[in-house]
Image 1: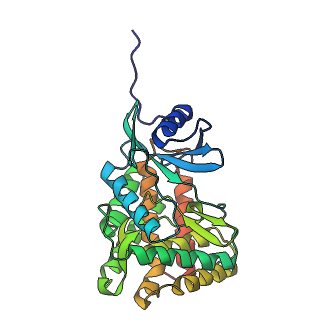
Image 2 (image 1 turned 180 degrees about the vertical axis):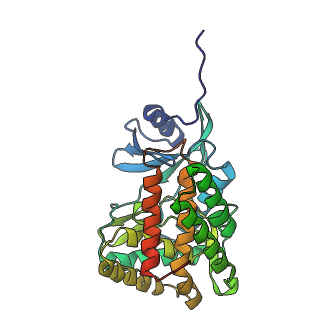
Image 3 (image 1 turned 120 degrees about the horizontal axis):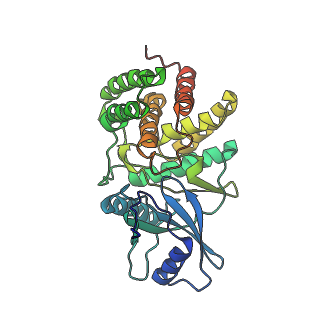
Length: 330
């Protein structure tokens, strides 16, 4: 007797999804759907003639329906205020979220507009200036906005993530000990923050070249707000600078582009002295969190890279950033 075996993470048929999307959104019979990326979530490129879209299928049990609704509420608000983001598209019934019964259970899907332009880590200083401007405009709309999602603080950025990372790697490696020491150091640093001197609101938390498109080196569009939540707005500024640093080994080139990014940002809104003082530390907390996310999602995500050598590389980037900023923790 043949029995259906349970799954924890399936890949939905692009052909069947194409038919569903065509029907739900009233697209033409020319609609084609192809796998684009099977990562934290599964992304499909949807083409209907010259029109392009991205359909995201959230990994099972990764985000609740409420969390997705809040992400879409944020994106719709940004769209309404003219901010440069890829936005969700409602179907013919004015619904934004589709439900698909996969072998592992109900999965959610959302159709997004396609961001114009290209993705590249090698952009000019002028483009870095424009990215700063675009992010500041997003922050103008998200300041003081409260989402029914995670609020990023010392507990869920530092203490809990380090415990999960330690449990995943089992052994007390030098990298784990470093993360424990760093966590204690950053917790004390964040506890000293005066919240009244820091802008707070909805943050993207994953702003880097992989989550933005550049069109003709002039127009910037942000996408993938999957990690959006509540936090200090300078989290996004710091994280972008860290990712810029890791993709530019030439520190003079990094400094020039980082300076342009900050200048572009401050043509729209000022970064306070308190925020600037916190910028070298904020990304360290975020990266500590993301290391744990990779461990948490081992069973659902491409995991061949996730080993002790990868942890050493991640920690090595943190140490290089800290050396650049002359941060000493012990």
